[in-house]
Amino acid sequence: MKFSPDNLTGVDAKYHWHGKFMGLKVNFTEVVTKWIKNREKVQQAIDSYASDISWNLSMSLKQTDNGTRMALDLDYKLPYSWLGKLLDLLFVRRYLRKGLNELNEVCEDYVKTLRAQSQMLISPA
Image 1 (tube, one colour):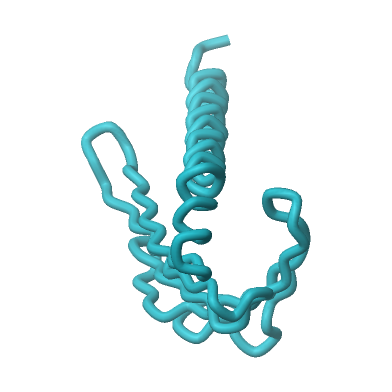
Image 2: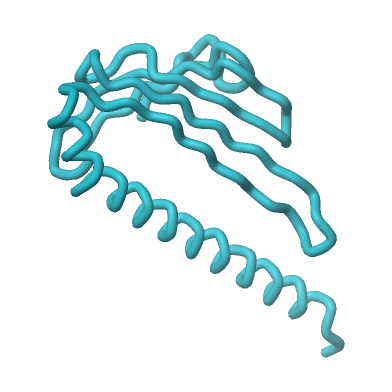
């Protein structure tokens, strides 16, 4: 991933992604369209490897009694009419859910590690 050197955070920050997704080479740019520091971030594809694919990704953080709750909302549109819908049904949705589940596990493990480290610091020697 490459960052725009002019603006790393906040509205109009740009991120350039390249690599592989579902075995396909990807090369696209996203721009942040909404930013509320430590609360919300919305980003949108502005230049994608397939110009007919579009998406908006929104992330929000909310303080709860048990910590912080993170919510992700992904709205995407695939091209090619019925073929895009079929690919979405057979592959894309399942792959995205798998990725979100893995992200959730990583976050939970990270929180457990932080809690364990903080307990080690608090526990008497």
